Image (cartoon, rainbow, N blue to C red):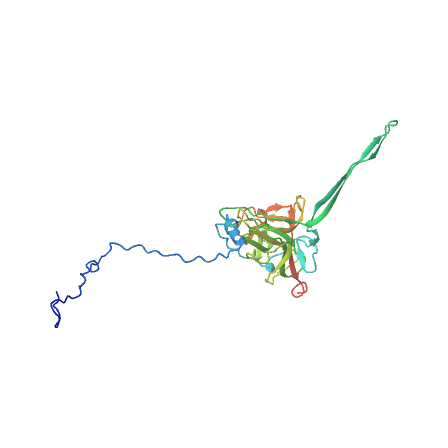
Length: 326
């Protein structure tokens, strides 16, 4: 006990001192740390459009593999010899050489039809029959003629065949532009790739060789809201020669389960063999196998012959500066 201070009597009692805090003085070391809980940051608002969301769910089905590298152009028009006599088959306009005439890109669709009933009467004396028969009148309306290139569905790759349509060169000049008519996507799911190429038949190798390739233009000039004519500048400044055979190559890749090729303008045909026994013995040609892009070279003999239509395309030629007068 603490003694009383001076001047205090014996009845003085100091304030009680608290007992020692033995619990606080004891250091406890846990055997392991408690787990650290981290709250995730708040999720940002999803800004995906309905089309993007649908593509993510359905449009990409069957496209687990990336698109293949575009094969390079290997031919130069000025180094390839003519392959055919020059007999211009079509005149598109002053500047274009085409696969078929623009005026032929039409099909006829039955709009209405009317039936009328006839009546006959027999003469009971002579037995002669007189009267009129019924008739049917069908009204036809014109509509754009199109076809859809083959786009096989696949769960393992992004491949499709390539269609080649020939153009006989009938003038000397610099090839400037490639034209064709493209339609829009059939539904909300876009295709994977859209390729166009200008090629030439090389009689020395009996092959169709690529001169120029557009690359993937599915979101560029080939992305339209309706069927319409489009064109791209070639920017190669190569001279074509009468008698050469150009080929316009076209490929669409749409392997997804819910994807569909875009329409392509054409002239309908009956399916009969075109020009039997000649070099160009079909209206257009198709690779027998699916490929990842338009090949740099392919032999003409290896291609499948197609005669259901003539896909339309045109090549604009400038004859003013380096053409026939050069």
